[in-house]
Image 1 (cartoon, helix red, strand yellow):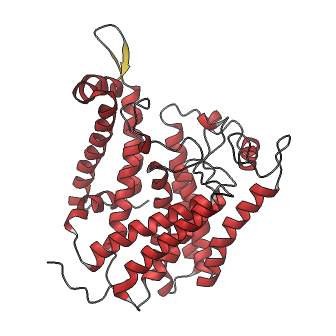
Image 2 (cartoon, helix red, strand yellow):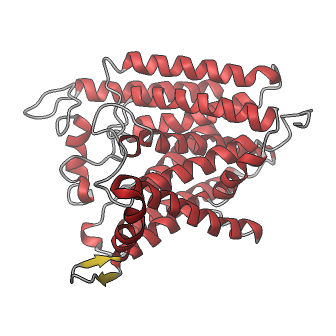
Image 3 (cartoon, rainbow, N blue to C red):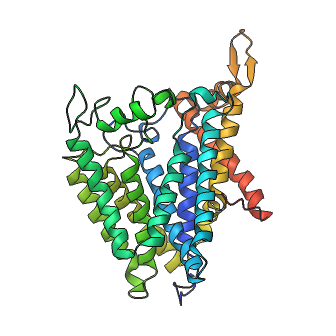
Length: 377
């Protein structure tokens, strides 16, 4: 039987740890298929407009970053730590995340001349920096204004600033203002996104900050002392409302992960609220927690396991083997072809490899967790 909860205010929200860990596990799953040619549709990004399961993972993580900012900074601000000290910590973490992102982009070739500047960790770094500053210097109403304002500013930029030879208000491939600006500012430094445009680009960073701020606002809602037993219902209702607004907005501003449109922010935030409301109810109200422990293990070293999983995946692709027919394979391809595909076929073999890779990292992170090794990044 679940334990009775006396004070949700004072105890750590297990639901946040589980949500963070589940998101990281999902991230490792979708970026490590056995073969990019054989993937279930929901485990790849939408080709352009639209939404898949994979398109939810990154905004979910930014949402969690926002929640974590509130809980971490609230304690610091209550201790009256000087703003200079706080800024030092914020800037230090921002620089570290950005540099780690650059490392992942360049590893193992380290071609710094053509290095892709932006990426997943780089955007997290930028969102963390800006949202932290907003949180420290604004009230709740100010944070709400920033959240809405950045989405509307993005829409205005995309709708009203014309692309030479194309015009304004275009959201198709190669035609948007976001893509045009990135091809000017980041030319030669977008990696394989050089033609399509940087998905973690300049203009699209504006609404991604809103994705993070929504996490900040949600965390503050959780700290309200009133209606403790109804918070999960209110979160779910908000999630439905946000998703509905995003879908309607999508008729005018397409839901698009690559462009990180404002409608995409609303839909993914709504779905994040729906998922989180269920986790909050099960884990923090009803205290059904045993099932969530594997995700707590992942979440306890979230950025660390993300980085290590990418490094090892790249190493597996640099090790060369020669097959019996003389064909040269990298170690990953050899493993997939000779084990997973043999057992499950191409499509399910690709999925089985991805699941196995997630389980491998769960085992490694379980050792970290048991030995109390928590790497703060």
